[in-house]
Length: 250
Image (cartoon, rainbow, N blue to C red):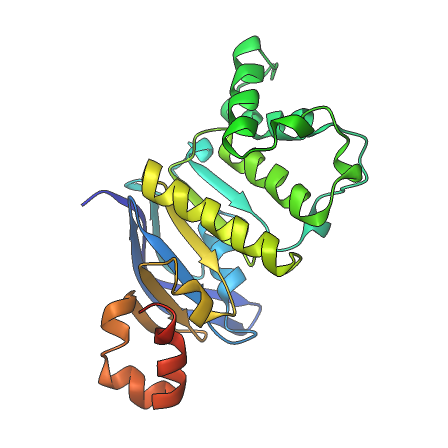
């Protein structure tokens, strides 16, 4: 088993309020995990804690076999945050400059961009079909194009896992479909593991092979196919809701 992420009894608190309680799951190479749950369930909190952006109250996180405290190879993890607003899309930078920034996490001081870095940026833009946008300003692009540029920035370091926080909320239906097909291709072709936060558990079932459902604690983690036959999940969600979640997966 090639473990990329492993959490054991993970708990996270904001002051006296516990946001997550005893969450345990694993992500292996090639997994595509749909991370779902209601508003306020702790989905983004879980991801930020894994990425070291929030402290752990209890439990353990391992990344590529190392405890989070000892892990420093962040180039193996590509992260696309929830909102484009976390990136200043009006910042005067070209597409290739934005994407090349994704390589800086792998560099030691002084951090300099090399010819090989520029070559890797061009290769990534070609892979995503946006090489023609290379010299365009980020601010000139549509929401869907900006999303692809930020995906390219996450991909340029050749990560072994991609983590997305509701990446399709700003996209129109056509761009959303194209985006998900692209992620699925990366997962199937390159074996890149994926964790994708979503509210649409039925839609993500078309692409993900595993479901991680939380509501401040772990409700379900396992294969979508097993979820659809799980009587406990039938009792928890109700037969109709379970059917909706499973319908598009099947």
